[in-house]
Image (cartoon, rainbow, N blue to C red; front, side, top):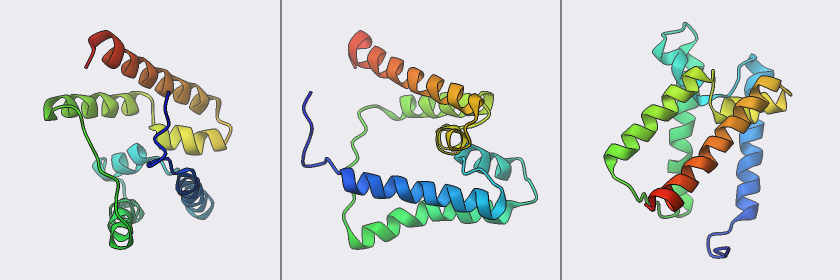
Length: 143
């Protein structure tokens, strides 16, 4: 295994993780809300009455990279599949977050921080499914 030292950014990754943790902590301590993206978006789709903070949170997710790009360059994104497979993958992930009562941000970041056994199981399942998918796609199917 080789590490791409040009794109190896441990300090930026650490700072990004710390900011995610800080945002999650502010949201839970300030408003008692979990920073799980699927739950936030689901609340908008379900037309829950507390939509203002949800829109603000999503706006921050969109505006932050735009502000970053104003001062720095973004890495090149290379997607090695077609639009149909991306749509299928998005649908399967969305379905999984509904059945799993949350996503990686809700369970993996916030749930694990709260020492939730359910979130531990969900995160282990997410990770195992991801490992299995990459193995099958890269080594069995050969894509």
